[in-house]
Length: 357
Image (tube, rainbow, N blue to C red; front, side):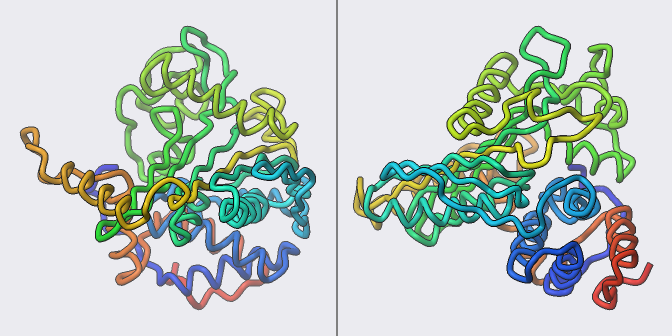
């Protein structure tokens, strides 16, 4: 994201979470679930991943009040095969079901070493790092992936067949920040394209095609067109694999079965796949973390290419952004704040914690 932008209004973390939680409570969610959903969005903005932050609030309100998502949906384990679980999200928001499933696999990995859960009956679940990072405080490696609406063509195609189906992996370190990788298998996520559109920016080359299959840097044309996979056929293949893991192990909808951009996803048809790997089942935890530290430090010490000031490990930029934003408040696009105010006013939520319009 370009850095030569006008300064954006900053919002205190607690104030923002309070407003967003209140909005979701007004949609019928319990206090705990509304907080969890709000925390997932605010956490993304804290890490400067605005594509999965509170810009999603109007979309989520519509899901909960109009589009058939159950604000009181309760996840449950419907199949238990030792290290392998199937979770039905009960048509709850994806954040509720995915968090529930990750808690279960972390607990199960205490006895089995590795545990995984396939989730069905779910909905959009936001940034996958939120779930992978659950494992870090348990000295475990977290893995999380999800299906998504089809916005990519298979390599060589010109039709929306594949979702960008992101993957997140979180690996504990010792003295260094943990490695947290979270990325879609497209050049960028649709949410990030929307952020570029909100900020009046052109897209980097290689992110998207227009509806006729021509390269474009226009966010509006990209939203109407196709996202390009990273690495050509490799990214398209990995997206397909993540989609299969996220849907076919649990019976969730795959690809075009989920819906399309024009009409949105079918409520309760999303699927996810999460896994926890207990480090002590394989290696001494301290020794493992020390080696991860050295791997990160080796990246930092690498000879830099011309014009590069610093080399970052996966998730390190987000870690630094979170530290700054917790201290100074979260910068939000003016359009995002306007949308948030509009929804809050419609639902009768107190706006005193937000900057004035």
